[in-house]
Length: 431
Image (cartoon, rainbow, N blue to C red):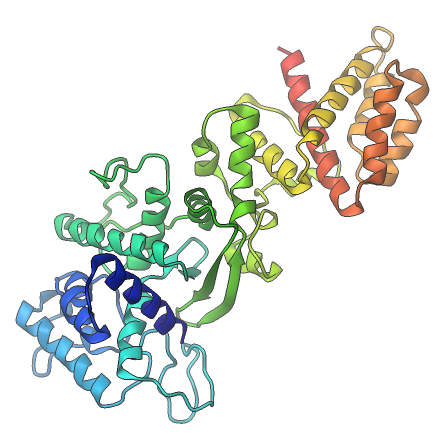
């Protein structure tokens, strides 16, 4: 099972980094259990496990267990593992136990006889705790050992926060993991004071505060900025009332970091203000249908409405959104020369629009027909209708040639980039 495999990668990396020789069981007793469960507030609620069940003959809730009672619950887990229990209540991420049929909460069900060792079960607890829960209800398990160790560093901070912030509810370790990674791989992380500029929880309401969900884009952009590797592998899933297994998904980091590189080059400064506001057209589960998460999956929310030819209304308060659209389109086109070429052409179109007789709008209307072209055919026809009226014929023909030779799938991206440039130029000229 995937949680076991992730747990094994993590424990091997931990022993290597800290020069220890923990077995899966000794790590559970000496490191994992004290962090996750030896407190009135757990990190994780493992449904139907001994840890969430009341003691026999005692009606008090789990949150009121004494240390001795929590250790009794830990020992129950050991006994069940040694007795051969292998369902989801003892091995997180495994299938639920049903004699006649599997429940909708079962995951990765198979009729193949699986030899699951005691070590595998302990490792599944670590793998489950390392899930990175993002907005949209999905979680990611990373296979990179450095990322897993960085998540572990966040566990230590989470325990401190839970114990000191009495209103913060527990059982949100996967949500915390996403916030922690985005913070650790962000611009403001202070190794000496990891909680500086970091408070990923809601306001206290009715005496309770919760860790807020982080976007998958911010997590992956942070990963791509931190690691130079061209790609990394993740496992995407949702364990809830009904389990959803998306599967193994490659994250193409060299594409995901491209917008940040372009932003710095074209607009100056770092990517933080764009990154904080970046929302995507698709949720993670839907984006994974492409089979890979790269630049295409990062398409900004709201951009597609301009594919049909509408010229945006440029507003100063929306400049970050416009810049987000522009750098994503350029990244999709994968040709930085098209930035200057499209901007220069937009300026030529604005000059043409203003060149008509005073009080006449014919040139403005014709220019906007060119800018509003939806596809290659429309663009060539619209520009042909004005070519005899322009002074910079060679530049017009050069851009028309680029559009005409471009793969059909890329044309809407270039024409949309052209519209955004045109809108920005009009905004500047109208001041």
